[in-house]
Image: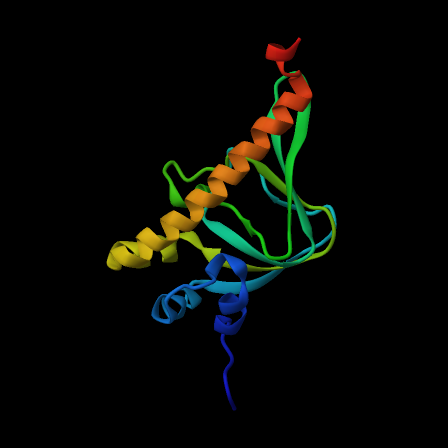
Length: 157
């Protein structure tokens, strides 16, 4: 009986495009499949963060709590996107909340496992850091745009 790993799924995900095959093998040991039902909470802002997700299908809304205004969606991620970077940086707490908009399939990556592997292989750590830096810039830009929509750009008033 042949045991199949998640490596082929990781290899075709855009987040890992061009990653050294040896690093992909290492990362695969930290991965498992997961599913989220429509309207299911995935994580909440401020909760402990110890994973990230490669979205295979479906859509997930990221939102931020705005005092006096409730939760506001700042971005929606879908197939081919990555969800979650808070696992990488202390204090390892989610910066946003996430909820499945529709049934979603993903590959979950264990943050503790990945941090240990990055410590043991600095080249892998640097490669993941570069990839997550790009995700963070995109999320922060999306958040800025959404907050301008909520509060209005005071410079143009």
